[in-house]
Length: 571
Image (cartoon, rainbow, N blue to C red):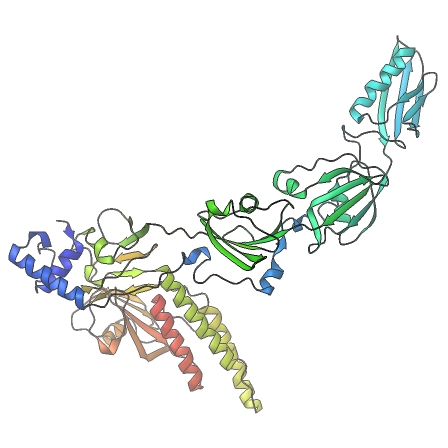
C-alpha cells in the first residue's frame, strides 16, 4: 500500500509507533491519535529553528549571482569595439582577379579579340583613355563602363555591322589595370595600397591593419573620388547582414575612416560584451537591444552614465529601456532578473510517481514530501537528504581556498640547510600532486535534513534534488582497506569488524581516521556511533610526511573532501 511520506514519518514517529512496512498511513489513524499527532507536530515545528537561505538577485549559474559587479579599468580594457575582429588578416590574403562577370571595364584593361570567316583578326587590344578599343577595318568600339559579361555582345554587334555574314567573334578580358587606393583617417597604418578595381573596401582596410579601435568609426567609412564622396559605408551592415555595397574602385580613390561616434559599453547577460558605436542622432535603448545578443530570459537593463546634472543611473524593465535615451560613454548591463513564481525540484532514489515537480517559489520540503508516495519496505524515508547546487559551489570554493592556503604556506617556505632543502623538495612534490588531485573533486552539495527520525523543514530552491535512499541491509567498506566491498549488516558488529573482513587496513591507512557516512549525508567518527544498515565505512589515508603541521593541514582537507564527496582521496 502506498504511504503519504511525511505524514507517515512524523505522525507515527511522534506517537512512538514502530515504523515498519505494515504500519498504517497517517490518514488511517483514529481521530484521537491523529489530533495528538498534529498537535505534537505543530509544537515541534514551532520549536525548530527555520533555515533562512540568503535570497540572491538571480540564479548563481547565470553569472549574475550576488551584487552587481563594477566594470573596472582592467575589465574595460578587455572589452573590444563591436567589429574589431574583422581585421585580423582575413581579407588581405585573398585578392580578387577582377575578372568576375560584374566587373566594369576601365581604361588600361586589355581585351583579347579573335575574328574569323569573312575577316581574320587575332589581337590583344588595350582600352584607351577614351574607353575604346580600336578594331582594324571596324573602328573604335566604346567598352568602358560595361560589365565583363556584356563585352562579347557589344564587340560582336560592332563587327557584324560591317561584316554581316560568315563571321565569328570571340572576346575575353585578359587582364585588368591595377589600382592604388589611399587609406586614411582613423586607421592603424594609413597609406597607399595596391589592388584591383573590384577589390572590397575591407581588403584595403585590412592592408592598413584595420580601424583604430580607440578612435576610428566602424559605422562611417567614406569612399572619395576627386574630393567628392561617392559612397558612405556602415560596417555594422556587413557584420549583421553581410551587405557591403559600393561602387568599383578607381586608381587614386581614397578610403576615409571617420572619427568614432557615440559609444555605449554593453555587458552582463549578453553573448559577449562590446563597445557599441551608435549613430549621432538621438540614441535609444531599442538600438542596443537590436545590436547586442541578449541571453535568454533577460528582463532588465541597468543604465549608468553622466548627464548635465551629474551622474545618472536607472534600472529599467526591458520594455521601458527600449524608449530610454542613452548617451556617449554610458554603460548598460543586461540582467535575467525576472523572479519566477515557481521552482523546479527533482527526486532521486526510491519513490513512486513523477521525478520532477514544479512548485511555488516559497515551497518547503515538508510540503513536497506530503505529496510523495513511497513503499515503506523499499524506501529509507528516515534518511532523506537534499542536494543543492549553491551549496556544492560553496563547498568547492571553500576547498579551493584551503588548497590555496596550503600552497601559500608550504611551497614558498625557505630552507636553511641542504638537508632541509631536500625535505622541502619532497614535501613540494607531495603537495603539488595532492593539490592537482583535490582540485578535480566535485562536491555534491548535500544538505543533511534528517535527524533521529525527524525531517527538518526548509525552504526549497530551484534545482534542488531530494534524495530518498532505497532501504538496504548492506554496509559499504571503502577507502584505505585491502578489499573494498559491500557486506550484509550484522547487528552488534563494529567498524573494526567490517574492516577486518575487508582484509584490514592498507599500508596507507590512517587507523585513527575512520568515518561513517550515513545515507542522509551525515558524516561521523566511527568511534562515536553504532552502525546501522546503509552506512558506509570510510578509511582515510595517512599523510606520509614528518612535518606535523603539514600533515595536519592535509588531513583536514582530506576530511573536508570526504564530507563533501563521500570519497577518501588517495594520496
